[in-house]
Image 1 (spheres, helix red, strand yellow):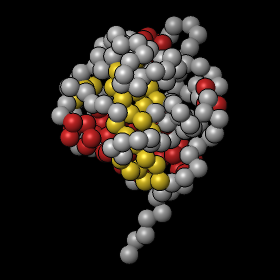
Image 2 (tube, one colour):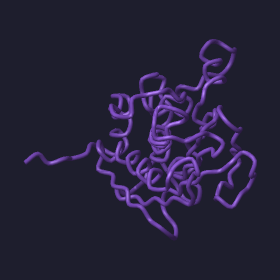
Image 3 (cartoon, one colour):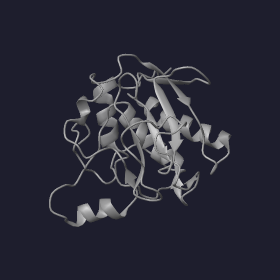
Image 4 (tube, helix red, strand yellow):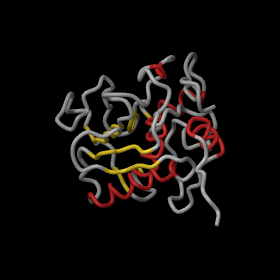
Length: 212
């Protein structure tokens, strides 16, 4: 369930799944068929990707934000040949920013057409690989970002959004990281679900670790 653009999105008549998605915090990846072709390329053509934090959130110390983002990328690099390098300035493959629903097109770099909706609801969204907005991840500043199970855990949401940045889409499996609805989890125990691993390795291959 990881390669189809509408997987995990419930549309049509309002059943319990639809209500679930409406009432809970969720990924803001749009419910639009064919959005997978937005970037014009199926995946990153390189294994070393750069990222840059354009701003931070006042909810956490900047060091905690950096640590959460680094850990979120490591979720994917641990099972693929991909490597992620942080940049302090200039352009990067994946630009990361926090923005409020109140700011419209704001200085934080959140200049797309997917507005946030205040606390709850859509907590973040990211774009499939490509140029310009491609790969970028935007987080809703109106959420209360945390490094615990209270509020909205930044590491967990970032790991999900970076899956989109790498060309993974939503999963139907409620146990998968790429399931679109936010759920509480134990930060100390966070294995990727087999569905997530299957999807990302379909795109980039396995980690190719050498056992000596």
